[in-house]
Image 1 (cartoon, one colour):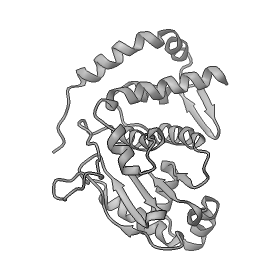
Image 2 (cartoon, one colour):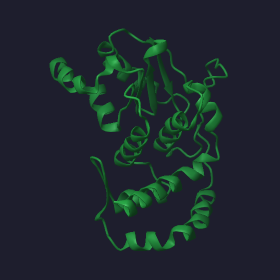
Image 3 (cartoon, one colour):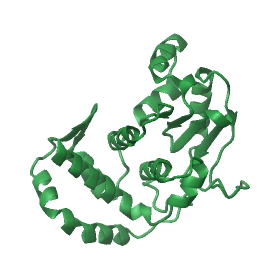
Image 4 (cartoon, helix red, strand yellow):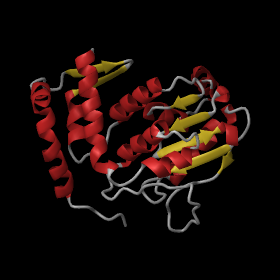
Length: 237
């Protein structure tokens, strides 16, 4: 069973950081559920910021925004970050011909790294590897494998399936570090943290980057980091 951390820690963290952005958040709170930011093809509303501020699951819109932002930081066209809506469709399509048309613009066979959101699933084409990072002790393994089976036929060559989780029933190598959430609702947050580590890491090795940059301290910081990013982009727009 996943241990539950008292919400007071989260509330105290939010209280301490709220003063720094008090004026901007007050302005946004007057907007009701109006549009807060349009970033590329993602529209964020006030309710999306409410989700980031409180102890709630991150919605697909928020994760999609952050993935889109991180994608803009990569100059290489060899990396694909698939937002939740695309991952869900790929895992559940019924018609193969429609799937071919849907997948074609993604250019899967031409990528070196492809990241899909389940908790977080990735295919490293250059090492012919399928990997799944799960922050809830392997709860999402079934869904990750379902998505893998759905996309591997579009890869040009099959990736080797290996589940890389932090389940106590598995023997893990040091390279396969997956931080475990403590409250049961931060899966979307850990998706964002895990992939952000790839961008922040100087090492090209995904697993080394995760091990170096992902730790429990990010659990409290990440929500505020994304809120600040939204606010900064809003000011710039």
